[in-house]
Image (cartoon, rainbow, N blue to C red):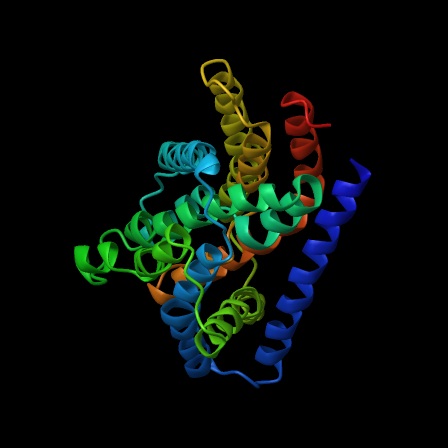
Length: 320
């Protein structure tokens, strides 16, 4: 448990270090509003498809893993469905600029940067393999259903932008590399890997930039504070506990149930609010200040919530 706490604390520290760079760039006027909008487009249109492609290219095809991978896919979809149902149930405040942000924050976790390192530390490469499936589902859902939830009632491209988006494009391009074990030549593969590596730094620098903007504003209303507390509880506790409970029930009906898969999905589900919440809120003119505050607060509080939840999953599925 102590090792998990130290690992999560380290990841949180790295995130906040990157956020501080964005904060400083705002305060020192190194990056202005025009530049941050350009960085948003770079992250959305170029970096996101590259990171999805790269995740597929990193997996080695093996028929024996297809069954477990299929269950990981089902579990990942279920986790996002649960998050969506809970978000819609608890947030109906009528303010479109805030409601979309609140729902999105509950639905989507920072499964890539917070989940993958923890999965590797406690489960090894196989844990990352199943965790990558969660990230794939996250990207598909985030850039389709998530975008729809975020801009509900606004004109942002219609169904075309929901069906053809960075998530679906990345999966379409990356799937053949996994299924047929295709290796790109270095002249192409290395640039894709390098662009994928920009995902976390760019996203967190942007979060820091918007955090500096929100600090310039007046103190939030009481209503904002109540809503943010609800997001913290739902995102960090309710959703992951619901997912773990469902996995525990599924174990009774699935032969050759893979406990590594279960713990990997549980780890991804208990991660804090996705950094993309701020990115997508900015792109679709939603409450960026609220999105930034939710990312920052849940990331910090995840130091306290992730270790016991992951530890419980390890115990429940007999991996500890």
